[in-house]
Image (tube, rainbow, N blue to C red; front, side):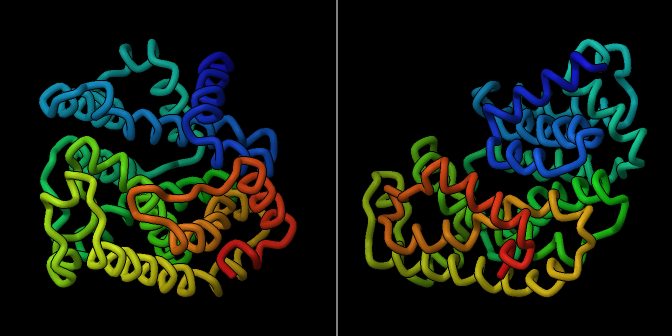
Length: 278
């Protein structure tokens, strides 16, 4: 299993570096399980890019569902991420339902249908970003942190969707809720042509404020977390500064935090957890 965990660690280091940095603040004996979880999420996130079309993507996601439900154990042992994930599930008692919900939510990624409502966006993010924080906390602390993971994941997930907006529209996807775009008279043909507008800027501002409200809702709960749960929440420390950068950026050209600053913000939050959502 050590080779499987090492493979997961390298995948996370390259595909989800913020999470990789956060794992360095977890006890060494728990990092492999965190790497397995984050590698699993990275594999799901790139299914569309690998599959190119919906049908092979659906087949790939179904394969992961079968793995979680222990219907492909022989095949899973030949896949380092699947093997490490199954071992992590068994050792830490992770709920199959949470993992299969995460897979089901990712089916949205395979298609070009726009997100209809804010409630749909929040459901998607809760089943992906929030769920991953909750599972990670179970690994490092063995406790239920859903009350804090819910809003923390929503803030982080919405900020991530705003940052990824140019990449999404370039491949014909739209995670911004249509109810917000319609309210601000943003036209899809302008979006997919790469044209910004006053309405789009206002729509982005509304979503940034939504992320900030979720971050504020998470604040007290995060402050009350036991120290052993903190590594699961460390990437949330990037949300507030990322939103500030987005506020000064064109939606089609978001200004990213420098890698050194992202690492420093995570380090600072590890030393003072009040800064995670404060």
